[in-house]
Image (cartoon, rainbow, N blue to C red; front, side):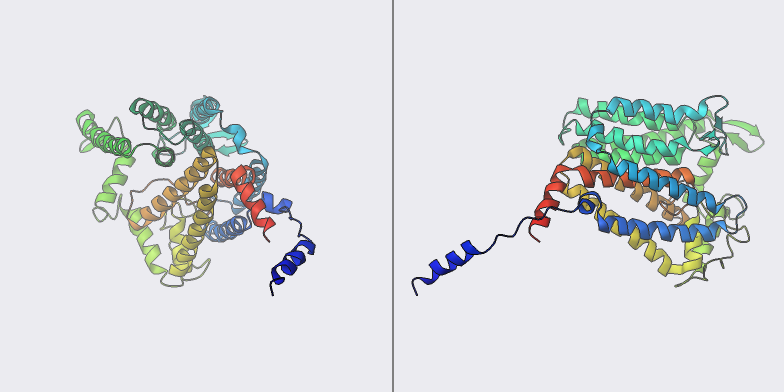
Length: 411
């Protein structure tokens, strides 16, 4: 009996050792759960967009398909690029931000987007550079804050960072495009929170923002001037921006006027019931009651035609995308890469909450579209580039690569 351990040791010594199998090229480049969720989400969004555009003469579904095709190409290119090479290009991204956002002001290039906003340029087709600037805002904010290695605890440095992060917002407000500007602010706020800024700095910043908003409305009341009996023009905020906020505060105040859009959106959502009336059978968009159905109010189309079940499926797909993306961010060994992923998730989260919230009366009405669902070529390409950035972090981060190697070796 005493010799049994020696025999077992000899057996183990003679047994052929299993060679460590390196991860396949596909496993190194592609996160299968991530790609699967994206494919399901994009397909579902195209289905809803197809139904919404079928009753609109101003929107062509083939352009949405073109946006997806162009976005896929951009995603693959960005995915294969090593994101770590972008970490030291902070100044470059700031310059690109300013050029992109201010390009609609170039005479002969910019075009009016309606209600006085100059947000588009003509390059064979209409392009919204403010959408593409979301990518550079993410990269600019992440590269700037990553320089502090997760310890942004100096008030002087914090104020300097906040000042730089406000540049894209100030530029976009010259169009003016408040919805896109709020997206820029939320991207910056997410990066500051995840980048190690002190809590008291963040709370003071939030308080200053609230005070500034109140000051803008107070100053506007003082500077307003009468254009007609009972009608006033404001200098800081556009009339439609003030009306949207007033409708949010009192949605039942003027159902035939400024509150009409919100009332029709609620009717569309409520009429869907549990499973909806079916694709292509919605009446709110078909009869023109629902404004901007394929873009700003496409969630209402989804709810009317596919009901609560359809809305729940969309939110579940969003939640799955966030879960997989945040797992990548959590495992990332590079602060720059982690901030990129968190900024993108924060951007999507804000857009989803704002778009769905405004259709339910829980948020003020803005022109913020619904990711992967709303009609828009520039918007779709931008979202695919964001997917490519997350994929680049997955493929090129050293910590994630070592985890994949260890996992493959134990199989």
